[in-house]
Length: 314
Image 1 (cartoon, rainbow, N blue to C red):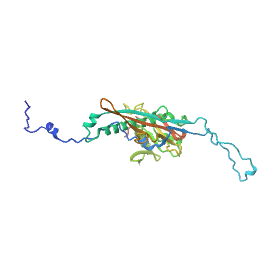
Image 2: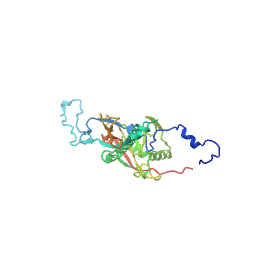
Image 3: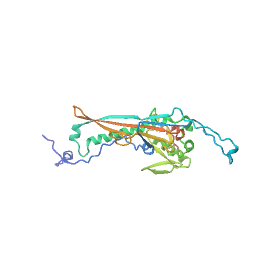
Image 4: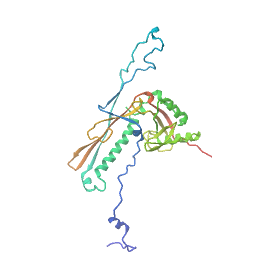
């Protein structure tokens, strides 16, 4: 026995069973623009190893004679000494296995192809992890490899224009971009505005950024605040990086493996592993990546930056 419809009309709930429903692709809430990997220059490797050969320390490794008449003086002799044990960067692997039930892909494949959507989401997840590792990896991460001479502390914990100028003094040979957590970007904006020099905006690579001295301040949540991407409070401490990128500029570069089987773009490989007895199709996704700092003055960091300082304006 059915319940009487008080409106004496077909209910919306039952009518919707016959209606077409507008659907979206699966939405990945943790997806970020990944500006770091867009701004960073990348180099493809054939062997998985990148050796940074350097010269032994010294401002003038080879003396030279400056004279209008070199016959009156003895010309200096010598050679330029190479570092005996240069740094080698080996590509690291970030991998995951994706399983797709073939019954799902057979029965529910419209309007979106299930396997393709699953693979796309898995790739986005790996790319997010890749960017985080470029910043935080214990071996090749940028934060862990800044030279001691290139580290600064924020005075009173504030990301002031003066301290960003000090970073520029450390990376003065064609600095490319600052890198900071969004909360640190906002904190710098407050400090600059407080001092009457609000930062101007730049439009680069499809995005709009605050800038300082013409250098874009690129936001990323991979520079953590108190060790977290999403801090629980409005305050906390983080770091701000200034980076020069490019191999020819002896800057910071990303590294990836070229010519992988199942290559899906810049160091990413997707391999089909087969279907098991339970009907699960399996895919192996791997990214091979690293980063190299070609000179100490290619990167500097402002440490212990407080992001929760605000001003009361009358």
